[in-house]
Image (cartoon, rainbow, N blue to C red):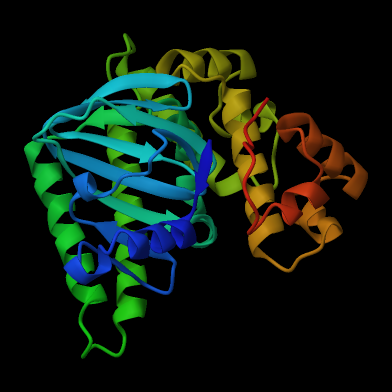
Length: 307
């Protein structure tokens, strides 16, 4: 299985002589835009991506598997692939047309560091990588793709990289907002349950750094931990405790790989009683020690997921 990051994509595209056709552009290797996915061939149809990928199908279809989730990717569908996930695609139709936006793991982590309220949604994104968009959202994101492309190729704009990065941050927020509408879609729940779940995500986005226990969030919402757990599981299909653990682990990973803080400082920041307790927590949920996770930054990635 091949492993791809933005540097590897750039090297491959030089080999394929695609840069001269302006089918993609880069901004300091932080992110890339493709305006026609058909011109990209990875050779091996199964690979692990060390970047965040957002793809919209405009025409045609193909078979895609992200992690263990398999589906038919067709017109008006979008796919979100998070760093370190394994992707397989095959059987693309002759009229397949899709646009693709990628950003490297470091830049994606920086976006989340500045918009921590988005982090709780990543677990849901990982569990539901593909969904359908309405025509209005398709048009909005296609326009954003063109705007990003224009900004990144405007040689007369001295601030094009700063502008493009700000646009990418806004796009990530937009994509996360799409997921907030789909979290409870198709679930037989009532409005009160949805309100509780939405309130739980809001509280989680505010407090996951300091509070890792379910009882804290139940108390904030004036309900029992048992009822909160039942509601979150019913609405999202994911346990409340797993939502909390995911946020804590992702924050730990980002701090380890994108900051200069030492392990003790990160343990303090995430409100663990000791560096040892923090290390055991990270090891339990990822299979790696904090030191090992830090060393993985910039190296060939391994799967890091909650156990």
